[in-house]
Image 1 (tube, rainbow, N blue to C red):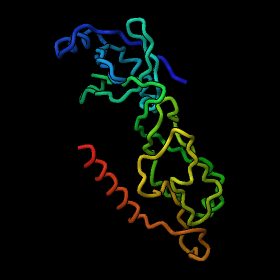
Image 2: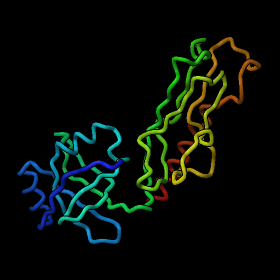
Image 3: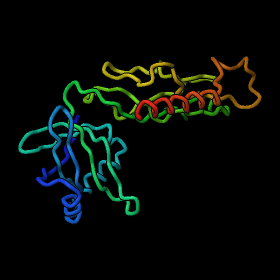
Image 4: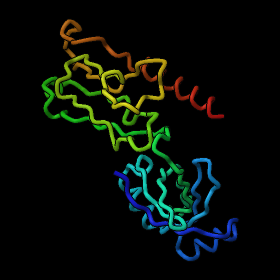
Amino acid sequence: MSKTLKVTKRERAGKGAARAIRLEQKVPGVVYGAKQEPTIISIDPRDVMKELATGVFFNTVYDIEIDGKQEKVLPRDVQMHVVKDSVQHIDLMRVEEKTKVTVSVPVEYVGIEKNEAIRMGGNLQIVRREVELLAIANLIPEKLTIDVSKIRFGGIIRMSNIELQEGLSPTITDRDFVLASLKSPRGVSTDDIDGEVVDENEEARKEQEAKQESEKDSE
């Protein structure tokens, strides 16, 4: 379900106009996308800070009204003041029913306190606390929830273990990357380990390489 943001259309653009908006205790911004001309807006910074505090601001589709027309937007960028930590500018992207966007979705691990192997001294090694997904805008989940209550020593959770609804897919497609693994305590024989053993250094190397490739692609 989408939420509502109150925005006001501005007629003037440029640094001087943006400065004047900030003096009025408002934040300048822009609404763009959907093959339409960009629209310059202003918004109450308190509304932005309130939504940022939810932790899912950039994964939430909002309803706005401009010139009496309802539009759906997805926040794409918020610029903060380097000293005052106040909102300086906001970018909102128009989204339609089938618009696909790339978003980073938080991963929540539940059932840790119920896991017998963890109670015996096992250590849950969390590799990823968020996953980048390609998603249809109106299907973006607030988070991915993973139950680790039944993982045994040596158990591994990979992206392929997560059931995503239709319209969602990971942006990394060249490998089945690790989300988390359960490391056994000292004294546990490898014969007692259920599944493969994760080479954490190797996983870290793969993650770094993937990040570097992603940065090259965006240049």
